[in-house]
Image (cartoon, rainbow, N blue to C red; front, side, top):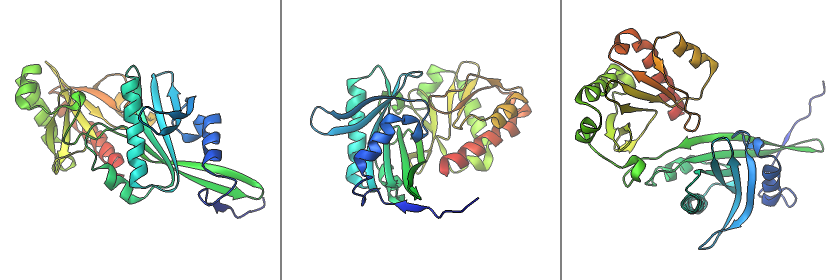
Length: 287
């Protein structure tokens, strides 16, 4: 088999393979982004208040729209703001759908994550880095997801993550389930030792230095605690959970998380499984 050295092409500097060309490739086959079997919905959509949204993709199974913005070269602050602004306009105009902002760029810099962390609110955002490679007289594209869908629960949150307090959850659930939540937290040891519980309206998350970091989250109920573990679903993890006697709810594909109903007895019988899952989730979230 003959070896041919590939040539990385800068789309930003290419007169032929430019942004319009890249946009057309995505719209003719949205699966190349690696976000699932999505449908193409709209292109160059003119928004109220100005601006054109590059591409809208749609997941019919989960009734979810992806607002996609393309940038050649490096990500910059103005483009990030525009991506989030377009996402916000679309979700308010079409509240019957779930919405996710997607930015596609040739170079997603480390500063990108720093800028994103400054935004308050609830922002589902995916960042995908694209590389164009020429081999002989053929050009192909490689898409790499460098930031998966994240929800930033910082200072000024919407109703879904509106700050509350421990008393609110004791009234909503029970004091016993709150004590169990705290016991689960402490039982995780070093995994959560640097974090504190962050009480929101619909769940209890984690915070470090006043910044949300929800690789796991808790939803206390009357007689148990739902533990949400943010991990991609795999056969290996499914088997680990199946071999325990933890009560498992259906996997939440929309938010990529396992949902476990934890009782007091699980901290005796299944603690190592719980710790292993939480450790994996933390590692995946931080990578």
